[in-house]
Image 1 (cartoon, one colour):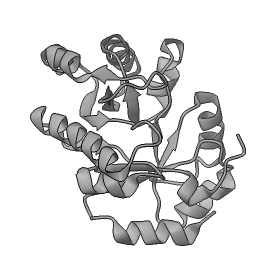
Image 2 (tube, one colour; image 1 turned 90 degrees about the vertical axis):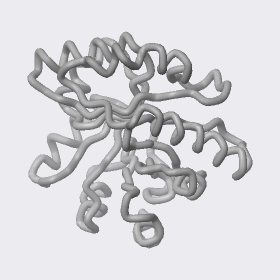
Image 3 (cartoon, one colour; image 1 turned 135 degrees about the horizontal axis):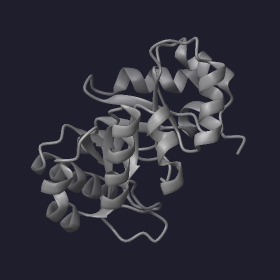
Image 4 (cartoon, one colour; image 1 turned 45 degrees about the vertical axis):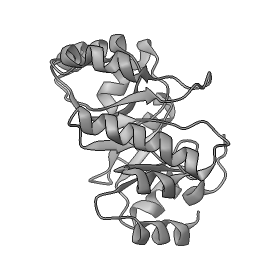
Length: 212
């Protein structure tokens, strides 16, 4: 683990920007080490793996678990049961199902809507125009709180191109009066901060290479 990288980034980012440590594929002992440095927010993308870690380190208080992976409809109940934040809601239908399941489970997950701002066949997400069309209906859904937008830029972009796409996300969030933008990962977090990110999803820059 690169604790020095973690501390440097924590000292560099503005106070309104939160760091989400992406711990998928990382052993629970590494999570405990980072927790001891004051890190409370951890991101996972596989429900089974996450639930195993949550059980092992359940004695650690104040940990917030974020689901950041692709959402499968048959896994929504487990996601709602085990995660405070869901960063990757990429369709109206999934948001509706999350709302219904959350009502049954007496939960109120915090939601980031995933949006695509450029063509990338490997990424999901709302088209921004469709999101605006559906917004009034989605904003009425019960048992969840839409906190912001999430986006993942295609790989291989220049710094200028990254900033341009991130600024589109920030602009749309502002139009919808949403406070948060979950954007920026290990390779482009500085551009994301410049463009107005409030959540950085950082994995390899902190933990190094994963086991899977």
